Image 1: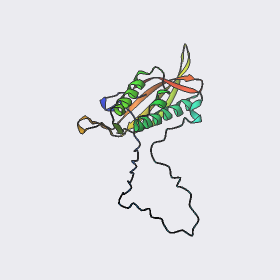
Image 2: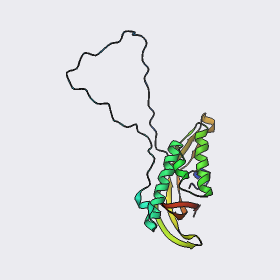
Image 3: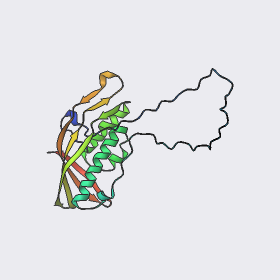
Image 4: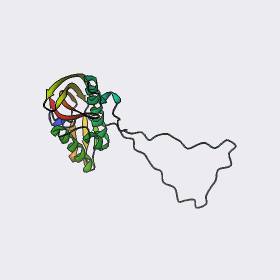
Length: 194
């Protein structure tokens, strides 16, 4: 769920900085292989250092219940997924969290379009606070309505060529999410600004 409050808030969330790896090339100046002298120490195992970069969030067990605490844990997780999707262009996990949510789909389209054009999204980190949930009875059961405050950092949509970059100032907004319970937790059905 990504809500357009103003054009600068079309996408509410953020980018984790992705590390760029530099690869060195071998020199062709020395055709004869050179070997290091034998070592007296035991061989070392290969490095297990992980490549840094965004890691897709995992839905916490706390988000899989049906009470207010579970709804709020789901909303926090949702914003983590928005941040991840913006950082990577990978929107599959984000798509799975909403059903027939127009603003959610608009946000996903915004991210997809930026990456499809060869761009990337930097900034726009969404931080959620002041969550409050209440429930409403509908013909298809009880839905949760979670209200929260989302603070955003400045964002740049960096498209190939400087002329097409988009800059959005940071800010904050109060958001209302309508959550429908499903078998393994929740799905977002609608999002609105307050």
